[in-house]
Length: 528
Image (cartoon, one colour):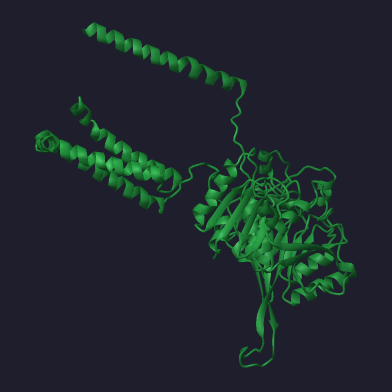
């Protein structure tokens, strides 16, 4: 009886050792239980080896046992190789996003922002136990994949009141980022909000944009479909300050103005305003004009058009007509632009932009030596610049008139760089001509509707405008593609299509499988 029990000691010994190790793994300390079970397990193993030494030696010398040992060794070697490969791949993983909309990839803008970081980033998402955390955790993992020093925590505000008070958290769902002793709250807990917070943490200089008012321009505080309050928020999210400027009352353009914007003036600027703008340009200023088509064949923004002309830009007295825009359920006056020249604004731009009631913006061939002009975007070949504005306003038939209208592609966005001579005269360090050259830039777009509240999210409209702003303010590193909202993709079928899908999937395919099965069964029985 005792001998039968002794034969099972080889099972008791490893079980006791495993129990000791398991207890240590759970408690993270070698307590009395761990020590006793480990010692007893080893002791039982030694007793078993001594008691059955002859039997063990006899079994080891058998050929079958040697083959078994070889199999065990080979298995252990293969497992060791698998573990080594796994450990290597853990630090050298690669993710492939095969979705059509790149749903599981971060945007080019986010990649650029993360690429400029030089210190660890700590992200805190304050979610209660009742809130779903899968999406924010997945988003943080994507950031961590691109930047290894991106650390994140999902924090329950109810259990961590000290951290809530330290970071100034006010409500559930907030995301706070910390970078180099600075903290910033993300305005939204999606990629756009987190990336914009990182931009604010890494950009120490806040440049200021002034939007001219007083002539019916678009309002930054207008919440209607035709207002600019949403694009204002988008500009501020990229670490700009935005303010309106009544140029009629000003003595000069403010010194802290990084970009002066004229967005859709309905009436012409006075000589005083034109003089202030021109003085600002001569001081290496940057100006952006968003000009809508004139209401009639007579030019109604003469002073503004003449100002552009002095810097090599031509605002056409016309409106763009694009017959192909009907595919977007729009009318002929809603052109879709997908043709861009190679320039700093659109060299990697891949999105179409949609405009409404647009005029042409061309460049002059004969300009002064210190002025360089470049077209940025053109309309499609099927479009044209309609010159008969009076007939169009009266509801006349829209048609292309050879020799009168301008055939497409028609330029609708262009800029000019102006080399401004400045500095001391005749200094050795500044060259023979004296002074040093700095650049002013004047850019014009033939529409102000494309960034209104109702249109700024359409296709690439927001990206084109923000890239333009970053170009004009010398922030070329932020010219990029921004995060896009992920849209659900639905399959919409007509009634007839639904019946076809039902018939094929529920009747044809199952019936085919049944017939094939019956055929094979009958064939086999006939052969036997």
